Image (cartoon, rainbow, N blue to C red; front, top):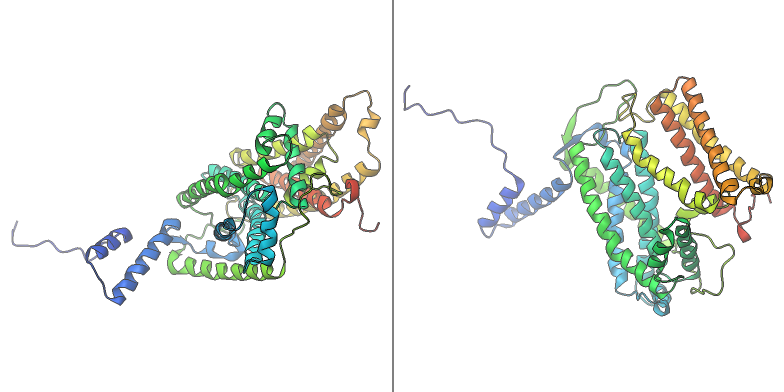
Length: 463
């Protein structure tokens, strides 16, 4: 072999890692303005690509598929973090000063009321968006293998978001907050054995007071945000590792076309964030966060209602024994949500909205049935049904707990079997049952917020 022959250089340029390029540019010392802008761009690109993959599925960029709900949650988190830090400077977590802090924000501090409004409405919107994000993943089968554990992390995040809102609900220390938290924490008392100790730990005593405010403040600004940040970091990493589901039509092959994150995805996210920031600022400028008179433990409002996201549970307590309304039924619902991804999937529907044509029909029918059936059950229970009175020889936990619970489970099983009888697959039938129960719970929440008056009596629109 001729030793003078040199190997042909590889015409393909080698890719250099962003961080390596940044390190080398720093070692070169002072740069011109053009080089400085180039370095800044590399840093920004590197930060973006730590969150996003370098390439994404082009069909997944359609807003009609994800609706940008995951990105909106991150945006709301950032708004809450910034406004929360600003509020810390003017808020004092004590019964004597907390309410005065709210008044000062409204009357004395420049833009104080706007900052509080942004924080309040962003927190409430975050609950709604988290639920919608979970529903988008469910109805497009985005929780199936290998994404089962990430679905569980998403449910945990939803619970933490609700708890974050609940702990922040007390901080204004007005009548609305005081009694909503009193009602909300009373639900924990129904947990067997550990319910009362947990309640006393959170309240710092037997009732809502100064210790409760301190505990909720610490949870709201430190422990819960840290937990959310940790799980969100893991959640995003798992999304990158497992890859986002790709939208497709029924019986259509997955479109494998990919495009670069920068600029295609980033430009869409930037515009989307600007639009939502404009909406939030406009809403917060014209709609004030609720603030009633200062908290008074001696005067209870009538009716005393929990926070709106707990009104479904409070409405359940109107129809079931407290152990079942506050613990058993919500507990079974949560356990089912965690277990759904691990059930056998008998159809390939990842990326398909509502799985199939039949899935869409049964889901819509379940939605209507859940709304109408729940209203009917509430009216029936309000004006006619009286199981404890009809079964006086049974303990209340059986006549108003086990008996209606058994009847509810029997109806769900019958509905599931009817769906199977008409040719629905297991996936389609489970989706229909999920939709039925979801619409029922949302209807209960709606009734609790708008149709319950003094003494929690049912007030019909035509009354």
